[in-house]
Image 1: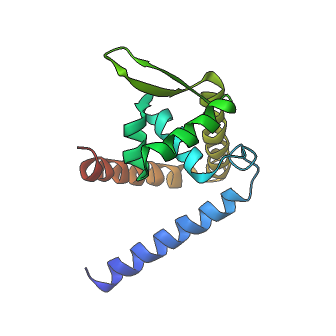
Image 2: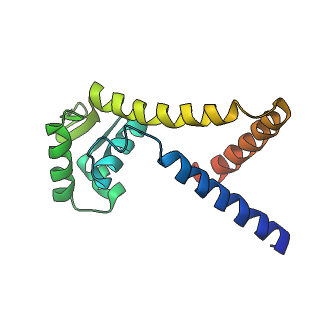
Length: 148
């Protein structure tokens, strides 16, 4: 990769990191939730997948099934997740978000999107068109690289 491309990539990623830090200073349900990082990861995984078995969660987190059981127990106690029998295999227990858990994820996402929209509202139309083009290109490449 040539020097200019590497410099541009570095500048862009540093700017995105700085933007993330600025946005993180704003009030968010994420920071008032009292979730540990592992609990948050489980909530996010469930928001993306709908439901998961304990084995699925253990694999995704890189921890033992016993560790996942403790994490899920605490999330159930907080009313964020529930367990139920897998309809296709009664030996498997599946975990999914409760309405309260789904609402927490929505609050976290909405706060970030609202903050981003507030910033974009101050951009001119030409810049918004360019940003639209670039973000679509970035998403298309990400889909090529990460969707299997």
